[in-house]
Image (cartoon, rainbow, N blue to C red; front, side):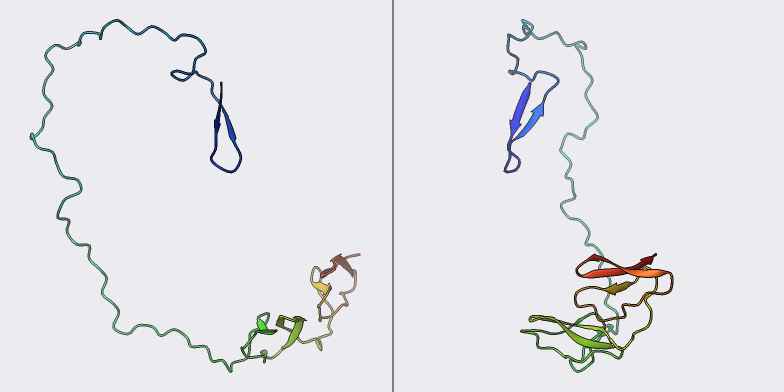
Length: 163
């Protein structure tokens, strides 16, 4: 027996391992001619107060709320003249913030709409194993430590790997 349902843009197909009422191809079992007699002719009443109980309570007690601290902690203010942290945006079309990066980083244009604080290119030391050594817009060292060589993974990333 298969059922179709539309829960998403495509139809879903479900398989039934039992026939549902009215779904059988042939006639179903005949119902009994009359209801079966009650097995207990004198049922005992259930313990009850006779009136329904209200749940939840119509008058709940109020939930206690925490009292505010005497001196709220001030949120740190951002000075627009502070230098930009490394790897953050520092320029580009439509950018209106500071363009000066922290020491050790310089604002590097990556496209017309985005410039980023990247490490100074004056750091021309050797790149450690598995470090980045090249790629489009990469400005760091391209020399790997002895025993490694710079292997391109894609146009934007090359990495120092063992020879």
